[in-house]
Length: 429
Image 1 (cartoon, rainbow, N blue to C red):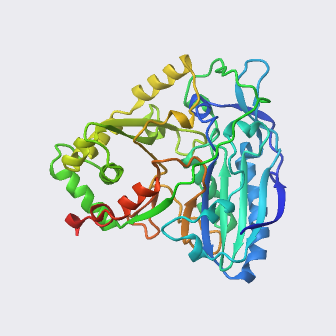
Image 2 (cartoon, rainbow, N blue to C red):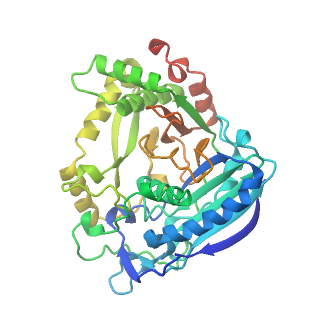
């Protein structure tokens, strides 16, 4: 349904200083998963499209001066075997496409349609392929009544926080709102781990890398108003001796509901995994503008019987404890352990009955105004899609609302949709 009209390479408007940036241990763990894919949908008139298209390409070239590693490629050093970002201005892909029969309404239904996949570039690409593929690809697709600006970014060089820093920088520059340009990105990996010898993973950059084919599982968007989130927090704190945050209460609510929908036996275990942003948890803290992977996966396990029979304060409290304890000492201990026994994350390693929460309601997604106003929707591509994968995004109206994007098998998704206590908790009205 999407026709590619033109593909060009965009380079930094000012040549970059040639350099190599060593990937950190948090970067290297991402080498064998998919690129990160996030897209913004805007409602605009057709006659506005062509002029804005050129503006997008021009400002992207300017943005790449600050974000010059995005225009590079990965390289494996023949000297120490380490993997680096080679800042050589090889450029990023800028793809212009048309989908005349697709409207904003078609693409922003609660059930994410398969056509959304066609709005993203580099589908199926694995981060390690950044040795030969662009580290960033932008696809801009003209719709029947709007436009989709979709970003595919190598996850071995940047996490979600960094991806949205890039988007925020680009949109503000495009709107010529230069007074609100965010801080320039910081790439110094020595801020995260002490400088030293590179970790040698022994991966062949010319070897075969298995493509990742996401399973054909349904993806749905569930909206939770600020009022509902606030009431969930109140409920979780009723039986708690410590303060549980809104997000912890929300995650506990989702964990319990999906466990019910999976209809698991009471003695089976289920694991909730969370991508924790370590930037502010380190001593000294990483700058908020640190561009790279600043996340570690933390996990907590419970039996299904416990989740089904105990109040919301139980799962929310488990999450509170594991999150509160994930500070500088624990983070650095995990880094040291990984450096002694390095390994990359592979999809097959995710546990049975697992939920994996990514993204953050704190990311500035709906603030990205390229000159067409605020986005009407945010969507992910099919990259890294698997049973139990979730993203918690801010709701468009703000104020603490959350949009949950979740991938589950059809029978489980159907049970979750029909669970009134999940979609609209009766005890919270």
